[in-house]
Amino acid sequence: MVKVILVCLIFFNVLNANGNFLNKKFPSIEGISLSGNDVKFPEVLIGKPSVLAVAFKQKAQLCINSWADEFFPRYGINKDVHYYEIPMLGVQWTMARNWIDGGMRGGVPKPLHDYTVTYYGPLRLYYKSLGVSSKGDCYMYVLDKDGIVKNRFNGYATKDGLEEMFKLIDSLNE
Image 1 (cartoon, rainbow, N blue to C red):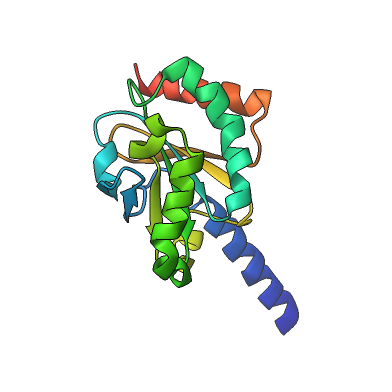
Image 2: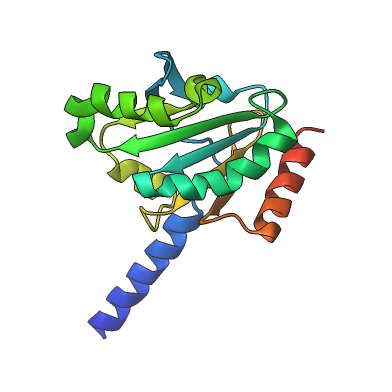
């Protein structure tokens, strides 16, 4: 009986954690862009709809690119919609920050340096508050003009996922 209750509680917590970020303000994240600017989320986003690509592993960049390669031709870089990529690195990587960010600068197109903001610090709070279930996935958060999370897409882009994301962005831009 105790095992059944424990399993039910764990299942409820997983379901709750995966949806508790919707219709809430995006959590506070502070980082430094690849161009050297201090950036605070969600403050920098206020005023326009936003798409935030969040990743916890380097291999997730290909996943992000599957969304970004369709996003940029349609919306451009930070015109009507804010777009930022936020690589989330644990505190253990802080000492290697200059080396890691330098490597990213070499791989990220220069026009995106202002919009690629690395975070170095504790990650556990963000796993929970952002509903992260797989650290290898990319997570695309769509926020309204007030920094409220309206939806999240994760994993590689699909035709249906892109259409849904674009429809939401367009509705937030009306």
